[in-house]
Image (cartoon, rainbow, N blue to C red; front, side, top):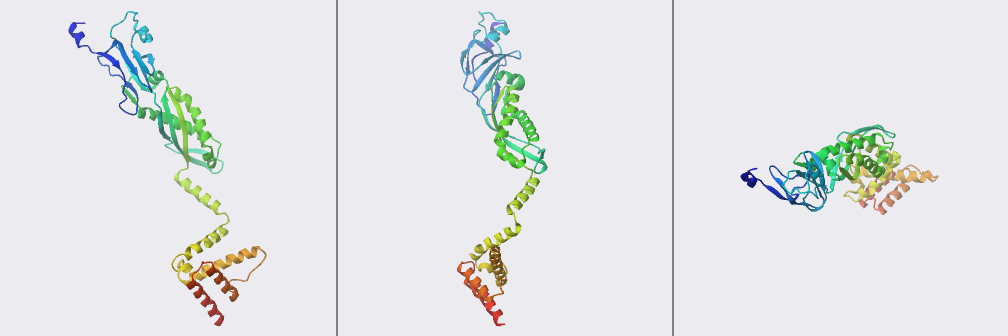
Length: 335
C-alpha cells in the first residue's frame, strides 16, 4: 500500500449504536472502506448486543459493556482470520448491533374468521385478537434466520412474520378446542397460557423470546352476534306474558311524572283509562293466585272507584285523571 493510500485510509476507533430511531431491532455499523483500528473501543449499552460477522459467519458476540478490541477479546475472529498473537493491524469485519429491549403491546388478530364446531350453536365462525410482547434473546440465531445482511431490520419487518405464526397457533387452538363459545370468555386465561406455550419454541427458533401472550377477545361475526343477542334477550325475558305485564307496571310511574299523567302515553283520557284497567287486571290476577277470583274490572262501580282512589293516593295518576275517570263511572251509573 502506497503512503498516499495509507493516509487516505480511514480507521474506526469507536464502535457504538445510539439507537436514535425507535422500532429498529438490528443495525449494521456503516463500514464501507473503513477498517477497525486494533485496540478500538466497543461500547454495548444496556438492552443491546453486538455481533462480529466475518464473511457471512457469526464470530464473536458481546453483551452490555465497554471492550478494547484485541486478539484476546476477539478469539473466534482471530481464529477465523488466522491471526497470530502479535497481530496489531487494522482489520475489516461487519459489526451488527441488536436491540434486546422488550417490544411491548404488539397486536395480533385473525384476518379471517375461524370455523369450528360448537356444542351449543353447531358450526360457528370466530374472530380473535389480543397482544403479545417479545425480545431478541439470541442475536446469532436472529442474524442467521431473520435479519441477514440487511443494514437495518425493524419491528415492522419482523412482526409481519410473527403475526402469521401467532394466528396459525390461535387457529389451531380454536379449531381443536372442545370449549363451547359461551364458555370461552371464562377460559381466555387458560387459552392464552396454552397458546403461549405452543409459540415459545417457535419464537426461540428465530432467536426471539416470547415474553407474554394474551387473548383479549373472542367474538362472532356481526350477523351471528345479532342472532346470539336475540337468543339471549329471549332467555332473559323468560315467560313473555309476565315480561309484558312487568313492562306495563313499571311504565306507569314513569308516565305519571310526565305532563298529562298516564293519559299522556296514549291518545287522551281513553288511553289512560285503558291503562288503568290493565293495572286493575294485573292486581286481580295476583289475587287470583291466592285462591280468590275478583269480579271483572268495571263490574262493581264501588270497587272501580276504590281502585281509582288507590292509584291517585299512590301518585300513579293525577287528580285530573282521577276526576275524569270518576265522572265516567258515575255517568254509567246514571245512564
